Image (tube, rainbow, N blue to C red; front, top):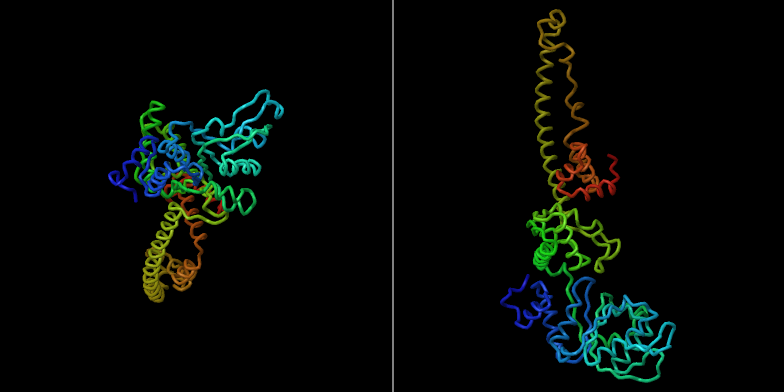
Length: 419
């Protein structure tokens, strides 16, 4: 449940407005409040969270609400710098220290002296660089590449990662002592899926921003579309939602986006990039549950109608059999001698036993068959029936089933339907 605007602390509201942070979920408000509280205390901070969750806002908050706000703030993406040059980028180098070093150069730690440096994707640092970083954290000292002169820096480090550093330590990919130095204070940024109605607020904000950017009419989302978006996992978090809304802003300008369009636009493999879902483990989504529920209700209604029809047919056939047998025994001679006066031919009066007529489709067998059907078989039969009713238009078949066209194609492939 979102926190009401009047209940948000003034400093948190100020930070949200200053850095254009959208959302009122309790987890987000707690993370912002924690960043503001630790800002005046000169300690290292580790920001954790999934990729695209908005971790980059928190070092800015820490810098601006701290005593170093008038000094430099430098953000470094450790994963984007080649391993061979990362030490030179961070600590600088002397002239001639390596091929191409035609002059001395200051590193980020020297440039940002007195300020704050943000090390994004810190888990990507090589082990040798991690050792250098540990020395900076412990003593404030570092060596330029190719130099033997120790230099001092007064800097605050805020690091961020989407990797589980405990597991990285266990695998020997990250130094344990560095982990404990970096994580003196830890801030966990919630993923978008756990922020509830913040998804609505962000979608509306992005829709308005893109309408202004592309000079088009803004899009809107139906309530059913919002419900589908709230259920989706959003493995790419806020970054994925922004790209998702941008597609609609470009191609559906001025339109109301329906649930069907949302489901068709979402990636088919919804758990592929999720760090919280184990590979190979099936994930239940609202659309799938809704479709299966509709199939089960439809089957239940059809079986009830079939039982009622069989019961009526049993009564009618029994009555007709007794009546026709009596008529046949008394009037057979007349039928043969005066055929023109009869309404039916003699062969039409020959009835098969009721049990023979009902044997292939008796209610007992229907009940037994329906209970023995697996959910997959029931689903397959329902899809085949919808395809047979709409042989030339699979989109109509999908709408009849209450699923997207993409889901229908996937089900046809998964169930091995040859149509």
